[in-house]
Length: 162
Length: 455
Image (cartoon, rainbow over all chains, first blue to last red; front, top):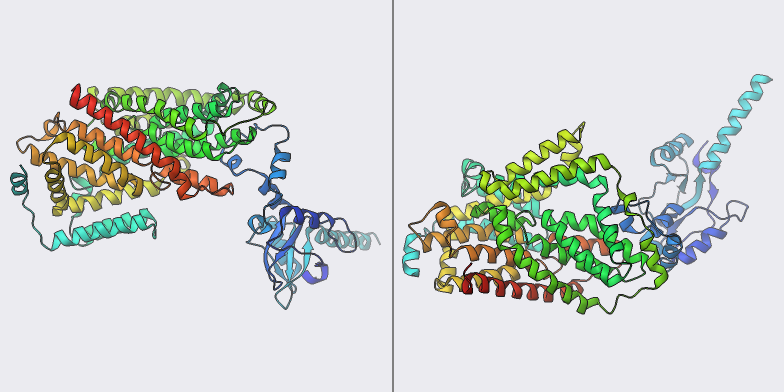
């Protein structure tokens, strides 16, 4: 199996100039395959359609997490409503300032084990898949790889039983 | 007296003089331009001084007059290791939360308390360390109270530079001055701490004018601060007790190092060894690797560069110029040194500045009192106010601009990470008045104490 066999074709994307508020709206309502259930991350494309970054829920959590919290040892201290306050504060920040720029991606023709290697070594659950034209053609989800593996395991058991 | 002084130190304007001067000027120019990292520049300059045989390795490594001041190097390293052991105990977070609660959630009162606490801590620790440990908590408090965090950042840096002026170990220029002039920890307590005790209330009035009316919060937000329990910040109580025990011993050691005839670096080194033993550190590799080696090698490189220009005679030529400028009037010399140091330190890092000024002042003293040597020369009653003026000018001058002191650079970096960068102009709008105010207070202090009351 190759990356392109399991990926879900790209439907939505973000731009670096979008505010986090509008990006949140897109993430919330984006299609994942046939279903309109929202996604946990989308590629950020420049006007020519080339990927310049990726915005995932992790990046949004980091945007809400004040930089000074990472510098001090007082994780036990906070006030009720702190995350809510910070979330209201970051609505107008641009996607370009928050996104991950060092994106781990795979080529359409990449064997599935190469994709699994990236997922394990870099701890990512979504891999943008790059097509022959150099643009993002889809996204490979950890969950779909898992489903594929399950199918194989279950079929092995059936054969043995049979 | 200038003609005698000039003949006392004959200047040979040969190839070594011009080569050494060129290396020195080039290195300092590149450091100021910030095109290449300052540590790399300092090491490259030192390599040139040695490679061009302006200075030989023996002079650079083993002679106090031309080479690396290992007393400064080991005092810096030791204090860094001690802080690295104490940091994870949560002591500094505890102090910061406790201070915020002491202010009853009133933003300006908290700003003032933080200024005093920062100044106090900074007189015992390095300024950068203090700012790195305390400022994150002050930003957290500013957010909790929904007030502008910028005053907390700027005041943190300014207060740490003021507090650092007070003691021998508070700021690297003082460590360097103490080592060069053979001054003890208690000398600094007698002569500089009173000046800082006068400066702090003046500084509090200044920040009241800057921000007193701007920092307002709502009553319901104050409970966010008051409901925090500072005891939760303590992560390792047994280690904290051991650390405080050793820190107390080290401070006592500093207080008596003069009468016991120990160098400050010896005291600090003993403290490190004792704390490493008591804390049962399994592998000190990690603690030692966290020493700011970049800063340490910056010092090493600078000492060698300055040693080179001391040897070729540039520094003694400069000292003759200072004597001619002030016509041997020591009060005028003190004032020129203080104000020139303040403006120079606002523009240049005060570490290379003091590294250059130290031998210059020693040379000046040699020309003024050619019959004296050793402590009699370095501690000449007329020279003492010049050392104190150098310390006050160089430390307080750091407040002038955003690049004047390392602590300022750190808070500007923090503001940038928060997406609210403090511009060069904005920092200067507060820093420069504070610098001029505090140096003016110091001027009055030096004049009154050493030239009117003659203590």
